[in-house]
Amino acid sequence: MGYGAFGLVEVLGEANAVLVTDQMLKAADVIYETQDTKCGGHALIFVSGSVSAVKAAVESVSELPVCKIFNSAVISNPSEEMVKIVEEFKLRRKK
Image (tube, rainbow, N blue to C red; front, top):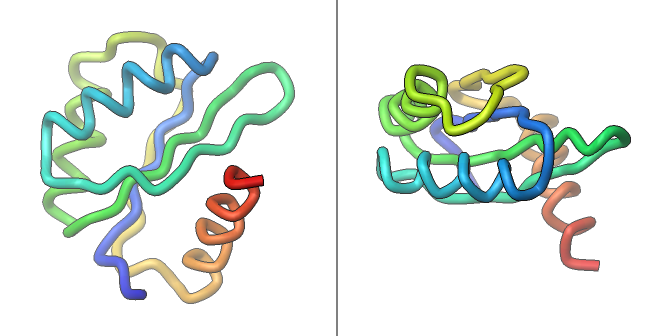
């Protein structure tokens, strides 16, 4: 499966992850892919779509945050290795 871009946003807490995901989905034509939660409760949310849509979604939460955003990034034309990482995160969430 090819991806135009991935958007990543890191927040603290599952509730904040839901709020940020909702805001990104409403802001642009992006697809929620998965999220990964690490020690300390930081959640990393992944969305995908066209480069312009992903940029718009990530910018929407950066410019009008509903909570503290620790980091955000847009990866255009992700490498095959990056796609594998996201797919592995998706598989882990299904368990």
